[in-house]
Image (cartoon, rainbow, N blue to C red; front, side, top):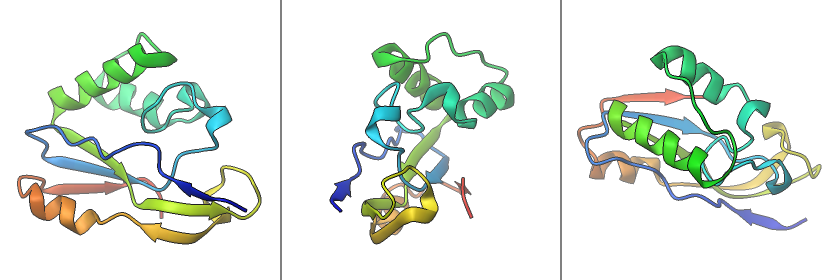
Length: 125
């Protein structure tokens, strides 16, 4: 078992007022782009974001998908990160329940440095 390091830095736009906190990305072979919830339509996160903001994403793969999502989050003043910085996958799959030897990101420091963030949304229990 290999310790995995989170591949993405927190995305925190200048005027972010909301922070979305997930857990950890899926296995790299499921990545359609290099950003949070990278398995595009294989995960409902971005489909729900489309619905919430009445916004249709044009791209679901590659750098243009990342750019499009960052533009929307900048416009909506939304930051995004995951709570886990490093971990081991005990069963070699993407399920959160199989993450172990977890090292957490310092979300408190992020919030302290961005005091204008007033709402935190957790995507998992």
